[in-house]
Length: 244
Figure 1 (cartoon, rainbow, N blue to C red):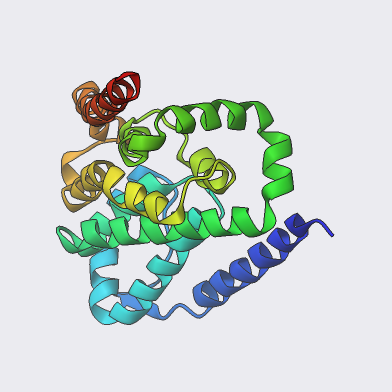
Figure 2 (cartoon, rainbow, N blue to C red):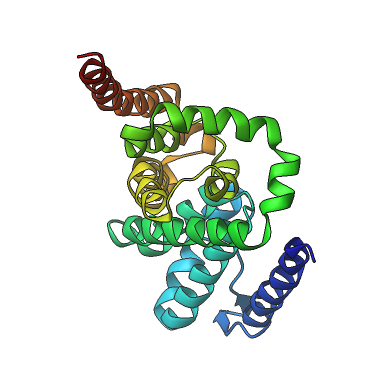
């Protein structure tokens, strides 16, 4: 039996859990208006609800924490887009530095859950759907096998890298879970920091484009390229030893 059929079952159970948490959200009264905790899907909505987020957190701290962690892990585990908005919301609700550290931990755990789910249930499907990409990734992994962590950090720091693809393909290209977890934790720190800090200063931004300016993208690319240098040096030193 193809284990991929377990994924919809797990996804459905996780979705029902989130629905249960959302359905049982405690209400927040402000004047004649009653609010329920929701996750905005647009940047402007986050700005509009920033005051409500703060009030809701103070009155229902545990619920806000549980629902935030649950939604974040849900998105990461099933490779659902939207991490940038979740990080911004973390900045609005928790500010710095707690929101930053929380997002770093949740990103690492959620990506690792995606890794494990892909490993246990998605081997056949991933290899069939992404066969050509996996061949290229395996080639790169082999080239950087002696400096794998630096290469993985490069892929995480580079702003154009498809993180969802790396999460589901990692177990099928012989990337150890320990190095995978470390690369996500460290490699996505700058990205998480930028997003959470923007959330903490939400009123200073008009759109997500203001957060990821050209200067910011250049800095991320520069940090990514810096991760290639140690790996290149290690590979050259090893090549010299082999030729002696």
